[in-house]
Amino acid sequence: MRYPHRILQLLALLLPLCGMAAPPARLAEMQNLPDFRKLVKQNEPTVVNISTTQAPARKAAKRPYALPEQPGSENPYLEFFKRFFQERPELPSGQANSLGSGFILSPDGYILTNAHVARDADKIIVRLSDQRERPAKVIGADDLTDVALLKIDGENLPAVKIGDSDALEVGEWVLAIGSPFGLEQTATQGIVSAVGRNLPSGTYVPFIQSDVAVNPGSSGGPLFNLRGEVVGINSQIYSSTGGYMGLSFAIPIKLAMQVVEQMKATGEVTRGWLGILLQAVNNDLAEAFRLDRPRGALVAQILPDSPAASAGFKQGDIILRYGGEPVEDSSQLPRMIGVTPVGKTVAMSILRNGEPLEIKATIARLETAPEVVSTMDEHNDPRLKIIVADLSNEQRRTLGMEEQGVLVTTLDEGPAANAGLYPDDIILQLNHNPVKNANQFVELAKELPKGKAIPLLVRRENETLYLAVRLPDKE
Image (cartoon, rainbow, N blue to C red; front, side, top):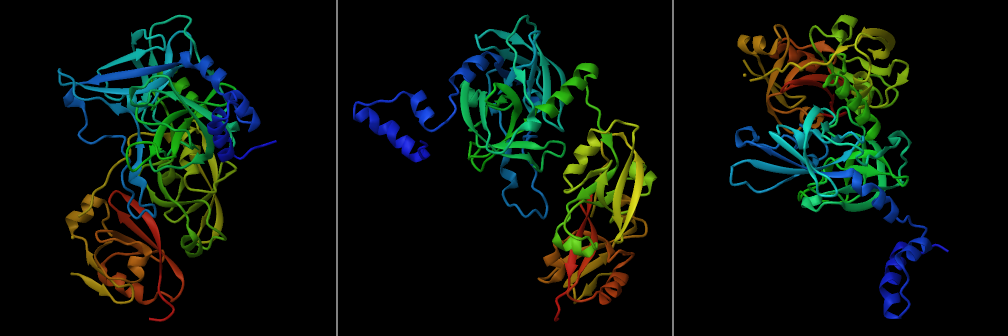
């Protein structure tokens, strides 16, 4: 017989009062709940505490692991996603001392943790479960996945068993062990809430979401399945307070081990690069680009001298398949490209102006992406409720737009604002037509049909993106 969870809690409280105390294992058995005691005892020795010190000159004024706000985002709480390792008070020496968790990968002393735990550290100390301390060196750290590989001297150290994170299912029980707020060997349990979760900071990471309680200091600790296998590395939480609020996110161990293999071999991680900036396809954009439903990855910008430029990609292309695999969401594509071997030629199915097309591109190595900057006769368009201005010659040279673009200076409530435009955006195209100056923009706007979603290509800070603008049926 199965008992509701709340009734089980009441039994645990009432039975002792009646002189009928049932052991915890019996209560778990009554509810068919897992007993984590054996799992914890077996795996506690594999979990370590990590402390780092760094000189104040190297300590960032703004925490590098806080996620930036996303312009135009529909989620007002994105700034509350945080990586979570605890910073201790200033030491007398003036050095910062940070605390995190990790776990032993192999008996010879390889340890896995988060990149943000080890970042910029002048000294790293690993404390084992038996309180022995060992200095550690960084073998490699990858900020894009937030994975770091450390090495300590040791023999016959207790090591974790690696599981299959691809086999995780929503609703499956999982257990975390770490050092929240410096409280070592703390175990918490919960279930997998979602898999393949996309976060603003995790372009290359399909996060495991769970309701396992984790807090500052748990960062870098392992997430176990019921077989005692590591399936993830705790990396981020969702919080408006800095503490646990029911949502935590782990890096899948399969992805982490791919990173580890490269770090061991070369000390760095190599990723494929196509040279495009992408955005998601919503309902309005699907209509504007004559797509049957929202799917695929919309090409918002093509970087110069990139594989995409050489292959003939154009702004407005929608990538539907990559190497034969469907692309249902734009967040999938960077991961697919990232794991593609450098030098491999990949066929992609795209939609261009409503027509299917196949393009082949040779994947290059991901390097540091270039950055662009932005700054101001004005023309008013009464239909879109917008005022635009021509760019100066200096602005065009700075932005690399010699013959294209107008600056949005003022927005009133209306179609342009409803589409998501902001002041200081630069409009590059209207209904697939290049915008050369403010006067031409107003003339193009006069031809827009009513009640139909029309694509609008804009540059916002250092990125380009498509918006869908719709004039009302009645003006």
